Length: 93
Image (cartoon, rainbow, N blue to C red; front, side, top):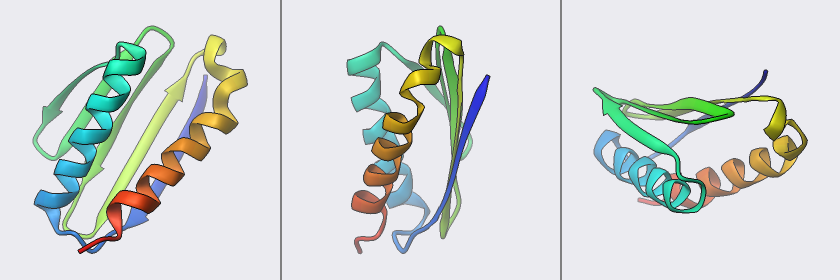
């Protein structure tokens, strides 16, 4: 199993960062049938072959994605999309 790990600083505050994570989860859920739920400030998601979490704090978002063998070849694309989303949505006031 391959693991993708991103930690990004943000200037949104906890609530707005949580909203950004929720939007990301909804978008991924619609495309890939990913199930997700919040446990405090941690959004956990899963589907066959993929699981992970998005952990929110006042100034940091940590994303961990574990890929099964079937998704291994898509790792570079998945990393790129996560990075682009975080860059676009976390550094706006």
